[in-house]
Image 1 (cartoon, one colour):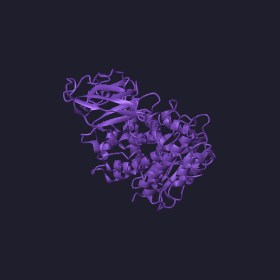
Image 2 (cartoon, chains in turn red, green):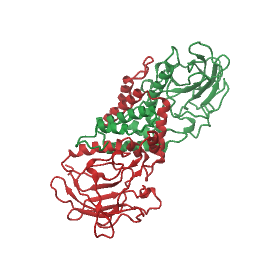
Image 3 (cartoon, rainbow over the protein chains, first blue to last red):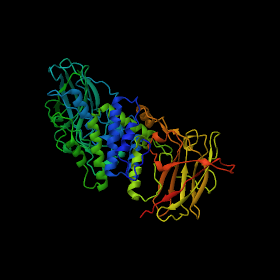
Image 4 (cartoon, rainbow over the protein chains, first blue to last red):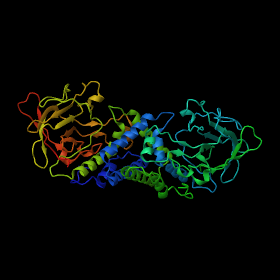
Length: 292
Length: 292
C-alpha cells in the first residue's frame, strides 16, 4: 500500500486487504489461510463495535496477564479461550473433521488446562483417590474399549483419567493433595476392559484469580463447571479420544462455564452392592475409530 | 442450552449464540456489545478455516509467551496486535470517532510499545540526543501548536517526543544508552512554539526475539518500520494527539511492518545553515481540536 489514508473515513476493507497482502511468498498455504481469515475477522470485529484504543489496550493487558500467570501447572491463555467457547468449538471441528463420524463413536470434549503429561501408569482395579475427602463418594468405574466398526475389544489401549477433588481443585492446584492424586493411566486387558476406583465428581468454579475469572465476572457469568471426569483414550492405529463424562444429576449441566457438555456424554452413577471400597458404580464403554 | 450436540455436524451459530447468551443481566451494555461481536467473529473465523486443536493451541502458546515477555519496558501483546494492523485500526477508529475530523487537523498514528510515562521535561532549544552515535545526523526540529479551528497558538501545550537511535533501539532496550536518551517532554511558549535537537530517524526492525517476531517470520513479512519520530501532544481542553512523523525519503514507507504510515504524516528534512549543532532542520506544525 502507498498509504493507509482514506480521506477521513475509518480504515476499511482496503486497509485490511493491505495487511493480509503483506504476507510474503514463503508463507505456508495453511498459515496464509488461517492468518488471512483471522486478520479479516478481527478487523471486522473492531470496525463493527468501533473498538477504541482504551478498550483494545484493556484486551492486550488481559492477554499479557494471562501469559504471566501461565506455567506448567496452569494455562490461563487456554482458559480465556475456554470461557468464550473456543476450545469446545475447535475440539468439535477437529474431531468431526478427522473422523467422518461413525455411528456409535464416543463423542469428544475439551482437554481443559489440567491434564498432565507425566501421569503414572496404574493397575486395573486399583484406585486414583489417595486421600479421599470426608465428603467424597468413591465410585468403581469400569468399561470396555472397542473398535467402533468391528466391535472388537482393543487390548492395551491407554485410559488416562483425571478429576478434581470435592474442594474443586486438581492436585496441581492444591498443596494438600498428594502428587498425581485423582489421576492415573490404565491399560485395557485382553477383553478390552479397564477398571479403577475414583470419586463421584462434583461441580467446581473455574479459577477466578486470573484474567479468565475477571472476564467471567465482567460478563456476569455462571462460573461453575458441571461435575465431570476427564478421559483421554489412545490406541495405536486409532484416533485419540479426549473427552469428559458428566454426572447427569448435576445442576450445572445446562450452563457449563466452558460449554463442553454433550448429551451423549452424560452418565448415571448407580449403587454398587457388596463392595466395601465403593458405594457407587459407573460403567462406561468407549469406542475408537481407526485413523485411516 | 441443554446441549451442544448437533447430530454430528460441526457446532454452528446456535452454539455461538448460546455462548453469547450466557452473559448475565449485570453485564454492561458496551461489554455485551464488544464481547458478543468478538465471540461471534472469532467463532466464525474458526469455522471458516476449520481451525484444529493443534493450531488453536499454537495460538494460545503464542499469547502466553507474549505475556511472559511483557513487562514495564516491553509490551509483546501489543506488538502482536500491531503486526496484524490492529493498533492502527483502533487508533484510527478512536480518533475519527472522537474528532468528527476538522479540516487541517494533524492526523494520529499508533502509540507503539515504547512510550514511557516518566519522561522528563526539557527546555525548548535543548537536545534529546545525549550520546549521538557516529552515524547519527542531528536535526533541529521546531514548530507551532495551534487550535485547528481558530488558528490561535496554544501556550504551554506539552510535546512529548521519543525515537530510536540509529542502532534501531530505544533507550529502554539498550544498556549502552543513557536513561531517557532520545526522549523529552517540551512545553510550548507564548507563541505556541516548541523546539529541540534530535536525530534524523532511521528505519529499524521490530523486535524479532518474541512471538510477534516469530509470527512475522512465519508470515514471511518485511519486519522494518520506516524512519519515524513519535509525538504525543496534549493541552487542557483539547483532544490529545498521539502520532508519528515519517521521513519521506525512507524506502520502507510503503511497507511499514505495523501499518502506521499516513500520507499527511510524511515530512522532509532540509539542510540547516549556520548552526554548528545541526546540519538538518525540520519544521512541523501541529493542530489540535477542542474536546467539545
